Length: 140
Image (cartoon, rainbow, N blue to C red; front, top):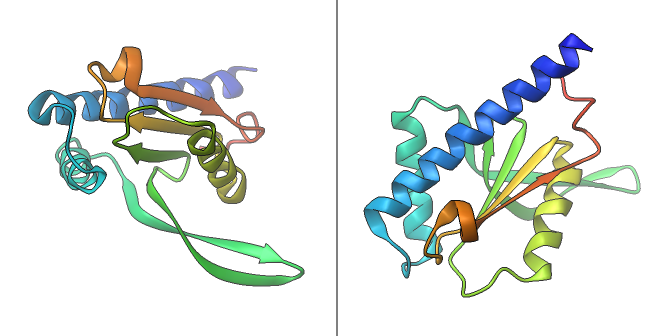
């Protein structure tokens, strides 16, 4: 039980740090820019905060016993346990939510964050967090 709580605490703290990095980028730039601009700035912010991540993380799909490179790319994967998908859109649509949930499943990660930089406030309107079935299978 304590070990499970440590894992959850680790993920919650990591989510808090990533959210803070997104807020910092949003505070500096504001809404209305292209997703690619926010991604480049967020990459720099994560580096400055010494948060481990991969950008444009390749997602392979196992289909009928063969691994396929489908050219799917997650915007960011933080510490191999949180997928972050960035958007700069008027509204988050169900397809955006389906995308991050699918990426989480394919990558077998416990958490996902969908961040929309085209909002007035990241925490209140621009962030959606998701938890997968891997939440309690997560190994730090």
